[in-house]
Image (cartoon, rainbow, N blue to C red; front, top):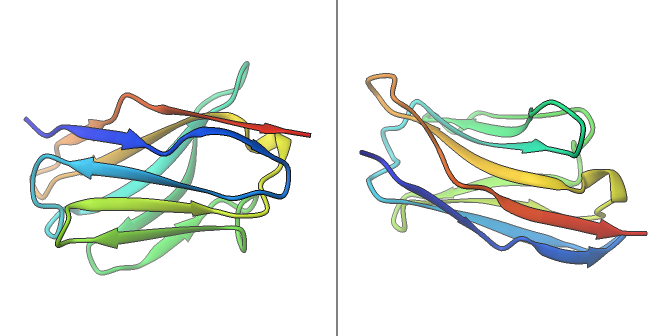
Length: 116
């Protein structure tokens, strides 16, 4: 059973930065993909950023140029560096990992609130 634990959320003013962390209970170097999703109040969950096992990244249009997904295989941790935060970035952010055999795992989520 893979466990993913997010941290780093909080309250920040618009224009500020936060870095989210997702620590995995197992090696992530062979994961097919890892990513960050978010769910804002009253909205569906959306993919924010993802990274394949080859290091290919993909971002939602709304965060391109502001968010960066990074992976540290030595720490089995994935990060989401968020800059120039906007009130519309307010959401619960979830870490997701897909194992080599197709297992799909989620963290418990971390709240990010951006004040105007």
